[in-house]
Image (cartoon, rainbow, N blue to C red; front, side, top):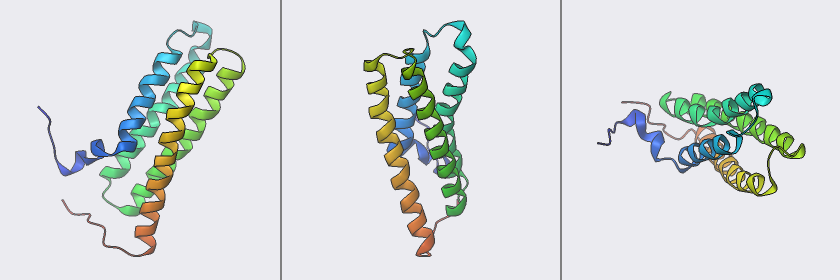
Length: 134
């Protein structure tokens, strides 16, 4: 049974859904890493997981300015994730195929975040009515 309320609306956002898919993909790519790489692996997974968590937390704050702040934090985590995966790829811990699959989804998610941030910023700048009631 799907439970719905106003506070769970973030689940309808394509960017949130894609960030969950990105986490699943990154988890699958990093799963076979050796124990010696456990710390950078876990840091990478944390950065990836942070994207979806910040999208949902910002959405649930009910304020446009706070929402934008959390989207910017998600973008920072997106950059951290990309940098980490580039490093793993550079030292051949990630295959070209896996990196390309990651990069395509990461790029899509990152652009969706940028578009969402721009949209929220325009609403703030235009002083559009932001429905922050329950």
